[in-house]
Image (cartoon, rainbow, N blue to C red; front, side):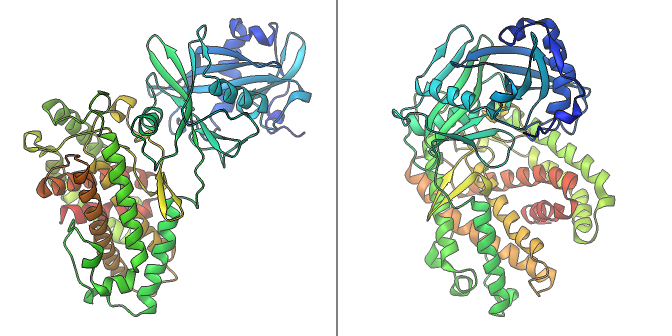
Length: 540
């Protein structure tokens, strides 16, 4: 078996202690956290510190978990950066001799008490994956190590049959069990229950919300300073991919039709932003261009989104999920956060002008010219005028967080916005912030279709962009009508039309400014999308 990392180590690291006592050996911990881990961790997909300079890694805690054959450790790491901040990570570790090794991906060769073998990420060993599943199925509670496995009511008495990794490694590691369940191991951890675990369990077991993968189990560390969520297990939903891919496929057809039917965009009926539209109210020329099926699917997505919000705001007993009014504290929190983010984006755009040209550069200059207007819009949030309520929301809602299952949609990944602190992710917010996130995703999908198929559509860029903005307004209108009708029928207070429009505009602007930083740092050509979004929201 060829070992991926072996050639990078001339000789194995040797330790006097036995593996079963490794984490009682100060010498091992010192070498492990510096010489061994520093080389390994920075290359992992789930490591979130790539843009910062690593200072040192510290083992802050560990627990031991044993199968009939092997001893494993769950290790909590604190990664410290030269920029004066730190992140916490979870790594399950195994030590295997050559004949026990299930994987070619190793951390390092090592020797413990004259036994040669390899340190590996334990998730690569089937014995360890089986051990996790069986502990969840038995709801094991290891008091010595404060390790709590929980079995959800939807798991039933299902014995372990098989396990495998799900797709390529992402920011977390997902394992598929019995082709029926997915255990997501959180790599980046927080001294607080993970929102994905909290919301998934609440929606499944408390509210019986059907359009999210059912919660089936979890792994938490119950420490004195707070719970740390290490794993979340859910049902595996059969699907045809995510809604982002689905939308791109549909939109390609929409823009093809523009050419095929020789449709003049300037002649199509215009509508104002946020105008609610029932399907029967959409002009026949628009249906002829876009097709009825896309509007019907948008309605279904709106319905599932509304049902999710009604469920998230539908418990009057659990204070973590009870709807709440706006107040001064929320207003201060919101403005501080947004003004800090806005200033950060201003700095990035001023330093990125040399990367831009054409329309992107023109829009960037317009953004800078209107910075006072945009800042004023963020400051003008008057909580005393808000009559609606705030609830726990998805927090990072876009087409990539939705699975397509036949004619239906399933919503997943409730971890929240990656840039936010774990505390901020749990703040109750207007449900319309999720809706705005989905609308920004529509906007992105429309423009991505244009950018990715530039050679295919013969129209001038300006006409394609005009078509983009018009299509966006119709998709928003169809979504809003279904969404508002459903949430109001479910007694979720999102305010009246004036407040709905204010909140949508406010949240759309927040999302577009947030996106601007990402695009300028990673793909400046696409900065046109958030800049165009900001221009159309602010109407300058």
